Image (tube, rainbow, N blue to C red):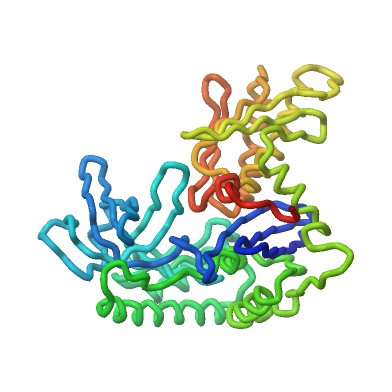
Length: 403
C-alpha cells in the first residue's frame, strides 16, 4: 500500500489529508490563533486548580485557566503531581496539580484532562502515573513478545512505556534513543513544575499538523506534499530530528496550473465526508446521521440490481456496505457509539460472515475501534475511542479547502 500526506494552509486553518493508494482515507482540520498556536490543544500540559469534586460520579472539574473547566477522573488522583495541596483527601477543592489534555471538547462535553502525563514520540510513549509496560496489539505476535521482554529492563514505580505501531519495522537502537530522551525530558519536566504558578501552560503540544504526521504509520510512504513555504520548513525541521529517513519524501508544491487542492480534489472529498448520504458502488447507499448520544448508520438497497436469491443479494449489499462503513468511520473521525442497521438477513451464517468481515475491516483503523456485536433487533454495535472532534465539528465555521 502506497501512502501520501498532503498539507494545505488556508489563512489560520491547516488541512491534513492522508491518502492510501491515491484515495483519501483521513481528513484533519486544525485551526491556529493569530500567533500560530492552537488554544487548548490535545496534549497541552497545565497546572490546573480543582474547582469541583463530585464523588458520586467519581469525577472532578479542574480549571486550566479562569473559566475553562475540564473533566477529570478521580481515580487518577492517587498518582497525581501536586504543586499545592489543600487537604488530606486525595483530591480537594483548591488543590493545584499537573494535568494534560487527553480529549478535546466534543459537542456539549467539556475538555478531558488527565494527571497521567504522556510524552509521545514516533515509536514510543512514556506515561507518568501508569507504570504498565505495553506494546501495540497491532504489531505481529513475535515482535510484541520481543518488545515486552526488552521493556522489562525499564520496570519502575514511577512511569510506564508503550511501544507504538510505528515501531513495527524500527530497529531497537532507534526506539531506545527515543525512550531515553523521553525519560530525560520527564525528569527535567518534574523539576520545572515546582517553579511554575497555577494556570501556567507547562508544555505546548506539537502543532496539530505535526502531531498528525507523528501519528501516521509510515510504511509505504512515498510523498509528503506541502503547499506553504513556512509549513514546509517546519515539517522539514521536525522530520530531520524525529525521522530523518523520510526527509527526501518532503516536497513543496509549486504553484502552477493546478493548486494542491485542485490536483487532489480535496474540496470534493470534504464535501462527500460531510454528506448524509453515501453511495456504494453496487447502487446501494448509506445514511449517516450523528446524534447527541451516538451515530446511526442505515444501509439501504437503493439502485442495487438484484440477481439471484434474495439472501445472496442482501449479503452482497451488506458486505459492500461494511467496507464503506469502516472507511467512513475513519474518514469522518466518528467516535463513541455507532449503531448500524444493515439489511436484515435470516440466515445466521450470513450474519456471522458479515460480522467477521466487519471486525477485520474495523481492526485496520489506527484508532481503537471495537465491534461489540449484533443485538436481538439485528442492529450492529460499534465503539470507537474518543480523542479528537469528529470532522464535522472541527470544520464548523471554517471554509473548506479549494473554496
